[in-house]
Amino acid sequence: MSDEGAPKSAYELAMERLRKKDADAGIEQKPLTEAQKAAIAEIRNVYEAKLAQIDVLHHGKLLSILEPEAVEVLEQEYRRERERLSGERDSKIEKARAGR
Image 1 (cartoon, rainbow, N blue to C red):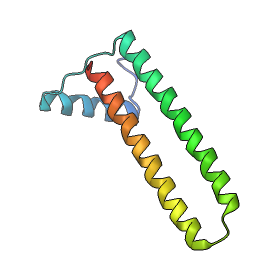
Image 2 (tube, rainbow, N blue to C red):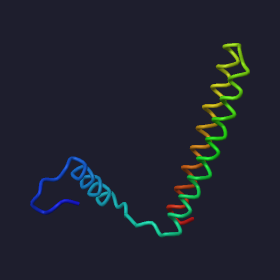
Image 3 (cartoon, helix red, strand yellow):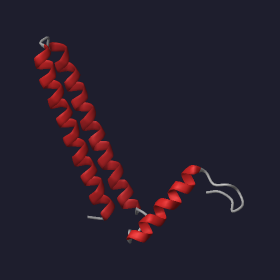
């Protein structure tokens, strides 16, 4: 990162503190394998496409609705669906990181 004599950035200092905190807590850092990196990239791509799809569908539905109450219901459904997909994506990424 930086030379031994050069001052460290706030980012470098924060990362050192986090690594020390993890080490004290017994959390082990293992580098990801190429297979894990590929699996995570694939998961991100799939869910990026799914999120883009619901964005397009949502905006299309919004154009056809005039009642404010119906728009609010549609917005709530849209947010729930985005949260669900984001949660699924994050769960699958964590499984890939763990090697499961």
